[in-house]
Image (tube, rainbow, N blue to C red; front, side, top):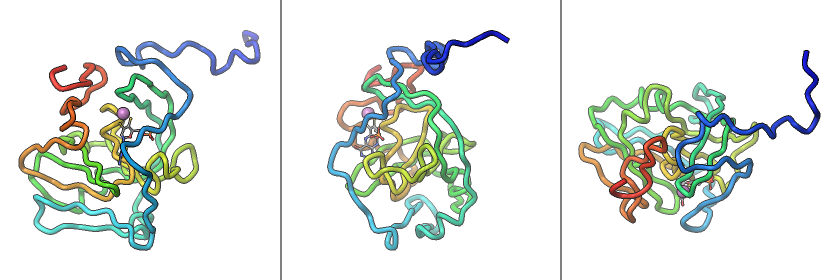
Length: 199
Ligand SMILES: Nc1nc2c(c(=O)[nH]1)N[C@H]1C(S)=C(S)[C@@H](COP(=O)(O)O)O[C@H]1N2
Ligand SMILES: [Mo]
C-alpha cells in the first residue's frame, strides 16, 4: 500500500466533474437569508400540502417525526458561486409526503415561515430528488440554516431549498417565487448555469 502523507487528506482537489460551471468549492457553510431567522414553536408547527388537491393534508411535528426517514449525502450549489460537496442530511423524502396527496398539478410553490416562497415543477420534487430535512451532519438543523426543517432540492441552485418550510402549494399554473420575481432564473439548473432570468 502506498504511504499517504498525513494532512494531505481532505485537501485533494475536488473532482471537477462534480463542480458545475462557474462554481468554486468551499468547506464552509455560509448563511444566506433574505430576512430575520424565524423560531417557530414545534407544538404548533405543521407541514401542509394544499392548493390543487382534493383535500389539503397537514403533518404535525410529531406526525412528521413518525414518517420513514432517509440519511443521504449530496452536493449543494449556491447561485452566489459556492459549492459544498458531500453534505450529509437526514429527513423525509417528498415522495413519502406526496404519496398522501393525489394530484395532477404540475407545479409547486414552497412556502416558509417569514414569507419566503420558491417555485419548482412537481416532477423535480418526485422520484428521490427532494426531501424535507431536519438534520445536518447528524445534528438538528440550525435555525440559521432553516431549522426546524427545510426543503432540500440539491439538483437545483440552493435558493430553491426553502428554509423554515411550512408546506407546498400545488398549482395548475406556474407562479414565480420570491427570488424568481426579482430576476433569478425560473428553473435554476446549476449545470446549465441558469442563474438569472434569460440565462
Ligand atoms: N425561507 C428562506 N429560504 C431560503 C432563503 C431565504 O432567504 N429564506 N435563502 C435561499 C438562498 S438564496 C440560499 S443560497 C439558501 C441558503 O441556505 P443556507 O443559509 O443554509 O446556506 O437558502 C435558500 N432558502
Ligand atoms: Mo442563494
